[in-house]
Image 1 (cartoon, rainbow, N blue to C red):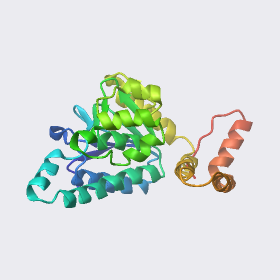
Image 2 (tube, rainbow, N blue to C red):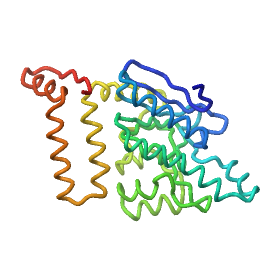
Image 3 (tube, rainbow, N blue to C red):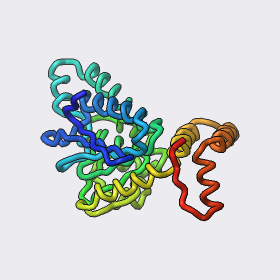
Length: 264
């Protein structure tokens, strides 16, 4: 399939998905969401790819929802229908990222606004440029913080800080999010992709099957009881002991060597 809003670059075991609709600051419109979902589906089954980076181009990572599309739907008298169709696609992406079996890094190069911010928060790790700017800007449109915003923030930071971000919708610096633990690293703009690829390669050479099981357990921990979750965790550990990566890791440590994991 030919993509109009994204392009995929390959770096050995790493795939980089780049938003390229720079004229509109890389909005998460219906078409872009569908393309991103399809690309993720294809990369999921590519055995050579073991880690993924999502980044933007130009001045923006993603400026969130398509404002012009929203205006047109109001003028057409179909704002609810448009929002229903748009959110089905965007929410599908955020859920897909949280359940994705391979580690995903958001490399935030510029504006990460509204659904764009929550797209980044849906990834496993975030590296941000010093020039990045974040905002939960939904309230500026009279909307609630969508794209999992109410779920992601309230499970990661205090009620009061989440309310500040969501009610006021002001720009947030990457260093503030770094202090809150919402992003992992802030780097100079010129080093962003180099640092993201370095981290992605480290992950790609790690026990990716264990990463997938860890992500699954993280998600399940939000909704299961303490005892039930511990039993699920225990069972996953038993299954992990049957993997090739477990054998490789144990042997390497005993031989004081660096393990060469294969993700199986």
